[in-house]
Length: 114
Image 1 (cartoon, rainbow, N blue to C red):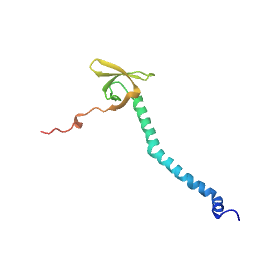
Image 2: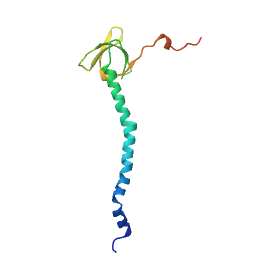
Image 3: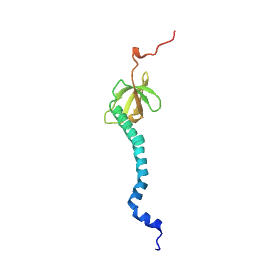
Image 4: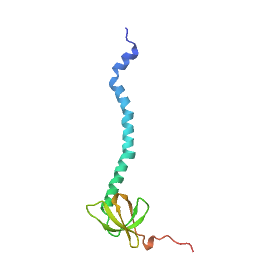
């Protein structure tokens, strides 16, 4: 008689109440995983594979925006020697290489107006 009906109803549905409270948190974590975490991990794997496949003669774009040609790839060291201008060679860290540029073929050149 001293217990109100609201407390009595809450005690009976304890398991259902816990599930309804945790469901939104699990849903938010799932969305974050599939939209943010998983694509970022995939991008990191692709970048590591790109850096591992560097070879002499590749044209690369560094994180600083410099386009260079790979001259020497040092195995076991995180350094790569690149040529940024004729007879100007610098050593850069592999992690600073952002992309490997594809050579432009004759068929790929844009049409000129004329």
